[in-house]
Length: 129
Image (cartoon, rainbow, N blue to C red; front, side):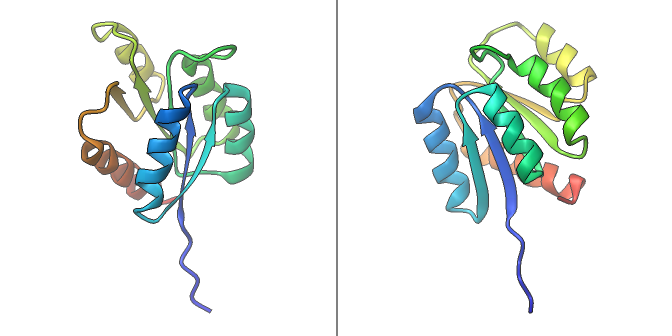
């Protein structure tokens, strides 16, 4: 049998509408998208699903995106992580996170889902997941 394995994404964001947009956009493009509104649930999904890419909001209730990034490196180090946030920091946090292994950084509102899709696709190819 020749089964094509879907490329998996886990999205962790506390905005239900944004999560729904991500799930719809990438789902229509053949990705298997798992979503979580809380960081702890997202980490459980990452451990279970072993996605190629994780999309994370920086500011989350409870456990923040910075901490999630560190945990992902421990539980699924091959996953590529992309931060999507409305938090404006003029590059300071972005630089710190990139040094910690963040793959890409996008600011909300997302003006071009095509650019995000290109980053996800490139990350999938590089991670071969």
